[in-house]
Length: 242
Image (cartoon, rainbow, N blue to C red; front, side):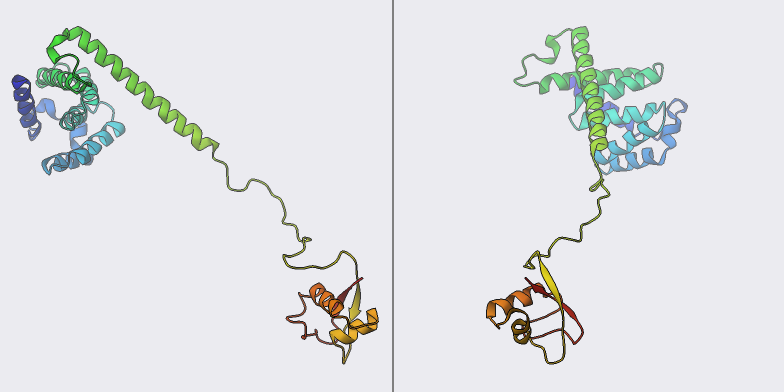
């Protein structure tokens, strides 16, 4: 374990290289996001630095140095499986680079870190053979990537199922009786004349000024009257319930 920590420390120091060596200069190193990631790393903002390197990987093909830095960030965040993935991507792209052997050691460090994170630590890192451990890690990595793809597909499907708030072109009906309006289904019309009141109209049409009659006339004409004593102006046609 002491040896692994020593190797990890050496690699962190190597990560602070100014990139002056010819084999470390790639297009992704010149990307503004890559440089921002280095700045965040120096400031101790590991997650922000990781986001920058992942953006470079998404935007550029063959971003080997960004894969290497992303692996380092994951390793610092105690997340060994994605660290191993990015380290392997670096080796795939630059198998003969000066740092490839160091990156292979970092992969071993990440593998040991993963084994130590297993519940109950059922096996110490050195209890498994190297090939068996690598095989298990690859399977876990493939399963993780598969789950990520399935989740992305599911999210896209869910977005496609979202419907507009209103998809019909129904026209609002205007023949509904407004709330509180008790107009009867059958009525006759009456034109307001000079000197009229609800009492006089009731006597003319119903033969008496019963309060129930007056209330019925008022309720049938609420759209024209503000109160039971405010008869519409002369010439206005009102409704008289039958």
